[in-house]
Length: 113
Image 1 (cartoon, rainbow, N blue to C red):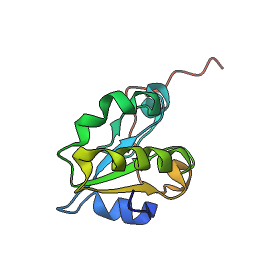
Image 2 (cartoon, rainbow, N blue to C red; image 1 turned 90 degrees about the horizontal axis):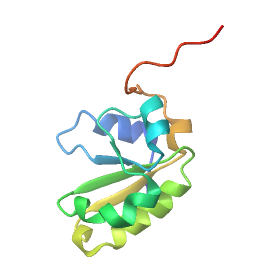
Image 3 (cartoon, rainbow, N blue to C red; image 1 turned 30 degrees about the vertical axis):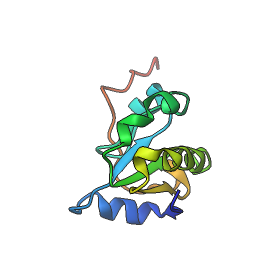
């Protein structure tokens, strides 16, 4: 792991030529309710089985709700020999600190009231 990155720096990188792969480690349901545009959902429990998917990445940012579990995810990804040349960071404060746009998958359920 190469440290942490601020949500503002992540947001700025979304438009850059060196856009990172953003790995959201929350559950599929939480991911569907709102996530950073272009992020990929790889639940934390699935990460060990899917780690080879990151072998070609140059820059990876892990994201979770509060910025705690994403540190562990970044360490796991960074320890994989296929990502030895990649920059792997965790987003500080998680989605709780994110002030940028979030996208959803599908429509929100209707309120019963």
